[in-house]
Length: 415
Image (cartoon, rainbow, N blue to C red; front, side):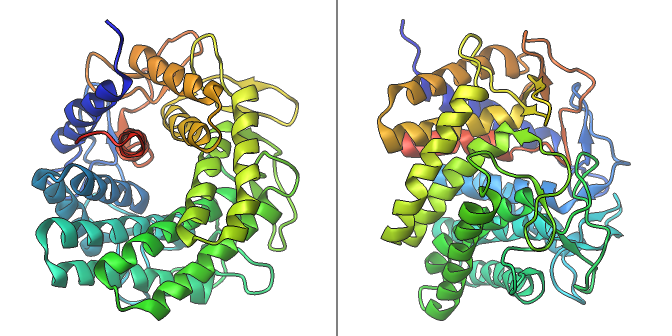
């Protein structure tokens, strides 16, 4: 019998990914979510918790509630929203704390713009879900106002009016800081591809969902639209200035700094997020400029980052041309999104075939068939990295649930 990829995708979303996190992610003693979950599905109550993790849970279950019209998903989103506003929202200075202790007190209080962007992404989706599913206008408006409040802070303090784009991090009270490093794998820099990519992603969602909750807020939506267009142009002319791989780190005036590594996962993710932003803006001239760039990024990702033999999608290549062929969970998810989007843009069957092969890799090698969800990392030969956590501050439901929802929505599946 011929396999039905889209049936498998729906089953993976509704029978594994979404129920997994509902069952294992919540810390019922301290509240919120565990900052680390082992491969045996045991949460670590002593691990710190980050705004990125909470935002990704909030976005996932809000998006799932909207797509699948299921109240239990919205209840999970309610739980995440309550925790976000109680533990992470900075009621004194605005924006979000980067991390908190398990007890919910601020741990790293600086404004890491990547984290604030994810809160906008999540809050705007939650607002739309509450409005559409519950018809609760007051709760929806409250959540959207929370998203807009963070947007306003980023525009006032994080946006660089001279050189464009957004700064990497600021102090708790939105002042310059030299402590900007996003993670242990990153460097201190003034600006990064990663932060600006996810601000663009967040602003796209805010622009899309704002009329769902506030159809009358046209000046606010125009402001979001202007900021979003600026971000698309920053990607086209700064982050992609040296070709069709994203440069990772920059100084304030967009001079590249740090290692010249290629991140294949970010490349293919940017391909579809850039096109999504241009399409939401409905700017024909911008779409004409973005389309060939998005396609070229996807073509290069297919050529360099995709293994047609196994179907796996590779991780990075350093400045000496040495590849890390580890299959990271989120790279596989973004390859699905990016290749399927490129197929829809071009009709090139190579992209459709690559999508199917990546999905086959996920089902046969990335998926943890014993304890649920996906392995963090798997070798090129299919050996899982069992020392890596199953979930936590950097691995949640976001990438893999999103790729499933994206493909189901794009294929027009009956849900």
